[in-house]
Amino acid sequence: MFENISWGKRNRLYQIVNSRDDRCLMLAIDHGYFMGPTHGMEIPRDDTALLMPHIDSLMLSPGILSSSIDPAMRGIGWVLRATGGNSILDADIDNEGLILQAEEAVRLNASGVAVSIYIGAEHQHKSLMNLAHMINSASTLNLPVLAVTAVGKRMSDKREKRYLSLASRIAAEYGADIVKTYFCDGFEEVVKKCPVPVVVAGGAKMDTYQDVLDLTYHAIQAGAIGVDMGRNIWQSEYPAAILQGVKAIIHKNADLKEALELVKGLQNDENKRRMLFETSEAEIKASSIH
Ligand code: R5P
Image 1 (cartoon, helix red, strand yellow):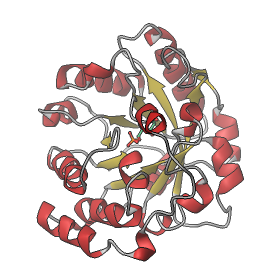
Image 2 (cartoon, rainbow, N blue to C red):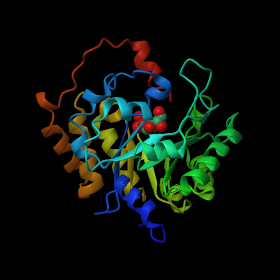
Image 3 (spheres, rainbow, N blue to C red):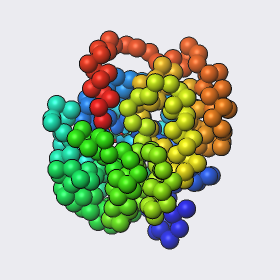
Image 4 (tube, rainbow, N blue to C red):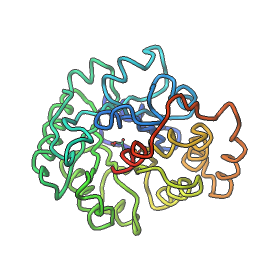
């Protein structure tokens, strides 16, 4: 994978994607950039501790990398969120600008940067210019760019194949190295029409572990190289258990039954999420809008 890409960028891409099988288990914890201390990820240093050994890469905001991640940590790729400018208190979040420059990302030793695009939203043009600008500056530094096909609040019904195919293809046409999008019916078509590797987001927390494994399994079967998943891992009761189930599907070709058995067997005290803070229904609802 990633043939005909310069050595430096390829090396960084293989900090994000596992070179043993060209698959990717990326843990997304960047939600705080507009959601604040989202439940399950209130204290990133602690909430990621049991998860780090199982992932290929971590997607996070630059300030959480520098404040909460041990610089001595090895073997994990860092994908830094590079767009933002809003919060969940805004009417919507698509009016984004670049919050991180490629040079600063390299100074932080990032493996890549993530830029959201909002196709069809009010600020579509601005978000696409953010992507274009980042691709142009990142390419001079051999820094990979992950394009995130975001929908925001107003476009949240757009998680279907025609829309996701449109958004993913546009991202690839601009020069994104990897596209992150949502899973949908007919996802195979989205992957086939996108000439660069695709990873899927998990989206808002689902009801059961079976749902999470199902999404992962079918995304991989449809051609995704992996996931960039957040809330369905760290908002669950046993984050390290469900993460290992997802990992088994991605890296060990486990089927649904095997993965579910594995998760069940790992639901023990050691893997249980420590609930340090009270979480209101309103907070839970707020964290599931996007
Ligand atoms: C949006 O908040 C971020 O781009 C997330 O990284 C993305 O939505 C993936 O996380 P989740 O699996 O929680 O949707």
